[in-house]
Image 1 (cartoon, rainbow, N blue to C red):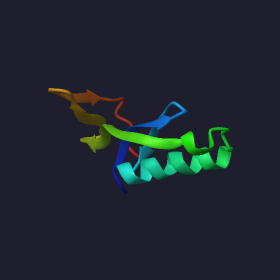
Image 2 (cartoon, helix red, strand yellow; image 1 turned 180 degrees about the horizontal axis):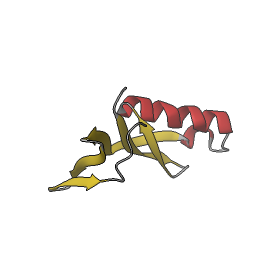
Image 3 (cartoon, rainbow, N blue to C red; image 1 turned 30 degrees about the vertical axis):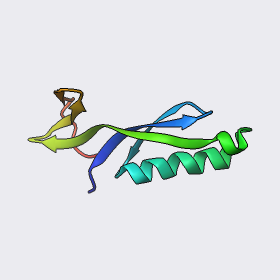
Length: 85
């Protein structure tokens, strides 16, 4: 099972998107594909400007753990303990 990661993808002309993907490149591609498929009326303005990593999901001792880096602080959140996806 591949690790899930949460990214914030910022676009020019179409706002921000939260995307779960295996890498920042895949997250950017998902948003690019969606912008193209939806035919937003922004022609040249619909592009991905940045991709920011927010957190990753692990399972540790049966508990869901979200971890990431937020500025100077490490973020660590224990979830509901459900294993699986």
